[in-house]
Length: 179
Image 1 (cartoon, rainbow, N blue to C red):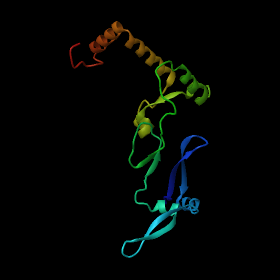
Image 2 (cartoon, helix red, strand yellow):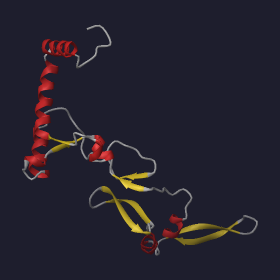
Image 3 (cartoon, helix red, strand yellow):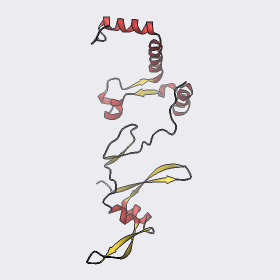
Image 4 (cartoon, rainbow, N blue to C red):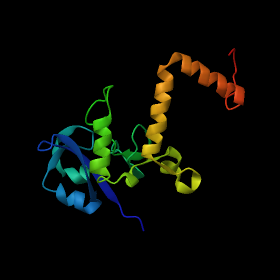
């Protein structure tokens, strides 16, 4: 049996960020039972005759324009119409430059200094599970070494042209235009 729940976004002034709170529907109503919104009250002819205070929780849960989601996800750079995506972007902007401090942070803080925990996982594994990708996760250090070698190739015009020529000659890459 699936329980009915409610998620609320609110700005935390103490933390200066938006936070998401999850409540069961009854808990949401109870939390907002002492807050009211004045709803217009009309007579039988449709003439406004006053207002009726309605508890905010009851008002919001019955509001026709409230947002509804099937599930809650955390997917950077993806938009799923029926899902509440908790990804709100990075707290800082990326700038080009040396990434050594960032990689040190991953190794020392997130991986607790243990290099065997530092892996790159392909998107297929993340989205569809490990049984759908033969590679799965790969050790970060080995990938970073290859990326560094490719970066060096990309910066040397003569070497880049020679690698491309050899790649085409061996059949690893099919050229669709003039070489």
